[in-house]
Image (cartoon, rainbow, N blue to C red; front, side):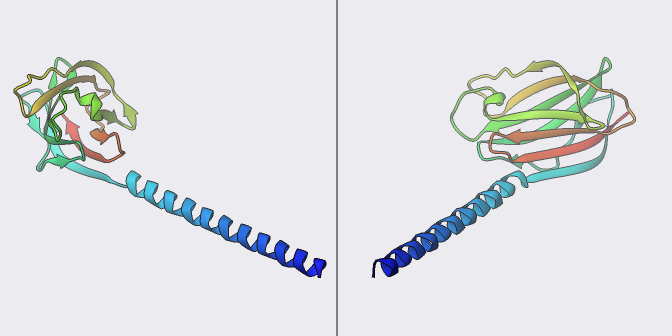
Length: 164
């Protein structure tokens, strides 16, 4: 009788342990799926637009909606051998803070991040739409440039263009 009880308890222990392990694996798979969904929210636009030194070139045909902010427009221009980028953005909350509190701008050429020369993120408290002015050293006019804006939760939008 003791052996039977011990055998039943042991079996139940292993059975419950196996079920718990399977539910942990299932939870782990769910976590992987949800994190891959977050990282897969990349919207990229490749443009035939050419940015030169004559004037600012408008790069977006529609706004980019993020959870906590909206990018209304991105303009670019070559000036004094540097790439100037202007991002017109608006926080979706009442929070008065710099763009870096909401998102990040990354500018690359030929797979390498361009060096930032200057960043101006001034805003007037009365402004609904704010300007973020950035200046970068570009490598050459042969390879396209990509501007990627990402939010803290991993959502990304990007646009590529050529230099002339």
